[in-house]
Image 1 (tube, rainbow over the protein chains, first blue to last red):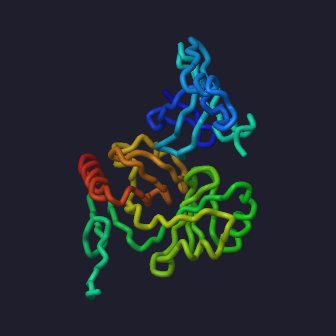
Image 2: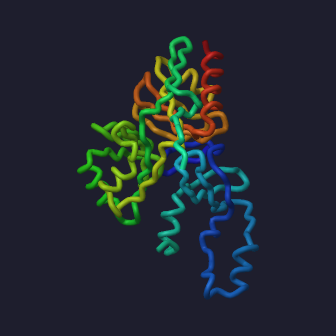
Image 3: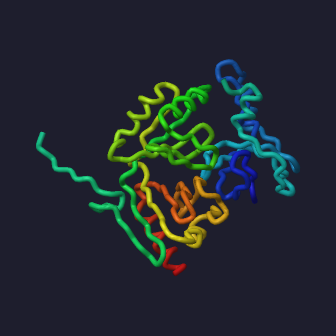
Amino acid sequence: MIINHPILGPRDAQEFVYLGDASLIHRPDGLTASIEAFHDYTYLRANPAGLHRELWYHEQGDRSWLVVTRNTVTHEITSVELARDVARSEGRSK
Amino acid sequence: MRDVNLKPITALGLDLPQVVTLGRWTLTERTDVALASLAVRRGRLADVQALASAAGLPLPPAAMSEQGAVYAAFWVTPEMWFVEAPFASHEDIRRHLLAAFGEAASITEQTDAWVRFDLVGPGLAQVLERLSNFDLAAAPSGTATRTVLEHLGCYLIKRSETLVSLYGPRSSAQSLHHAWVVAAQSVL
């Protein structure tokens, strides 16, 4: 599988480490969120047969975190973004 | 405290840098280069670019390296570079860079974390394609990338068609050296 890195171009998936669902970016505020919100964040994941947004780490490359949109049925990758940009655009990063 | 008599050794544990010639390729251990990482602090990119330009330090674009008069640099990740300088004049490279960049960048000494081997000769890709999945032959001169050799995270810098610098973890210097020798012998 090849991941088309937004900065470095096509790179072998061997260079990357998979973390999981990109919704992990949306960690609830530890001081104000309810225990239910944290429970859902920690344990509940969608398991779609189709497009899935997920976090990959380019460990043997530029060590950036990426948000990869992958079809879990065909493994086709339709979009790759820097997780930093995604998090900032969603107001996650200060 | 008693006087202690310490003597510096190379990453391969010898007094002098090792040079190995196999066929048309020469591997030279480089101990005469100081290394530091330079990471831009949040929102200070323009400041760092101006200060780098004043200090004569190149900041090459993504996946590239560049040689300046004293300093050389290669890109490692967005808004971060590794900076090389002559060891004789810049053994304390962090202090030199702190003086140039102040609070605009985070600077970390890297010299003794890495071993540097310079590989010289025509057709280096024939050897490196046996060691790494990076397509060295297709990459333009100046390319710098992180890759895996012998299960070790390394940096490869293609300075020209006949000179490639390899940075690997210093504590695995002998493994990396061995991997190179085995791969080169298998091509010859």
